Image (cartoon, rainbow, N blue to C red):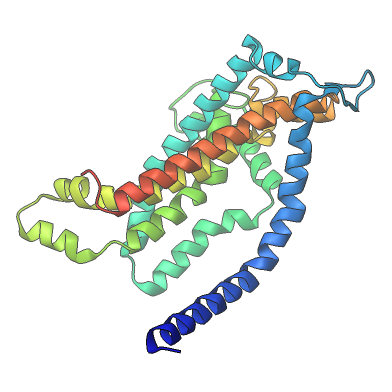
Length: 298
């Protein structure tokens, strides 16, 4: 055996060993995700081409009527409203979350940990408890209205609860940490010498942010936007409690089809639309992240 063939053989053995190691590390996680998420989701999505039984259940007769129903004006309006509400919550989360993440990244290490714990603490509190707390705050006799009246800002209580604004506020509060954390990770990876060089070359703070900080942290911002937008779009608890049934989002419609109408094929069709949106968003995030992480357009 020549020296070159021995070298190739050794390299091949090393690559096989690396593949085996990766497979052994990924195996348990992939098995769990496949068995408890991918398979049930695919099973439910397979119902989209079948019919609803007369008293619920599935009739395994092929049909495409579920898709034509899903494209009806009623559901299009709900979907557009859901996108607007989820988009508003996402935009507000970005506007509020970016300076918060930036400020945390500038703190000393010890204070950074404390600040991050404070950001994550809402996730350690029961979701329903947090949502009901907003009912207490926003009701006519709530803390906000009583404070404004006592300060003389208003004479009569404002109608804040059971409105779209209340739903946006609830979604913003629930998912704001999902915006701050990826932004924080992106900002801390930013090389401070780049901003220092820009400053030394005479760039103002605003221009340094526009030309250096924002483009290089854009992948984190995009990831945060997806993390907030996707669960906001499918949420049905907050619209139910803070919207009072007046604000209907696509998540509420999907839930009603499964639990009330017992029309699983149609509910699965609406859920399929949400999954398509999710896949498209992650594909967009992947493209933009690669584009900007490799020094794309500035």
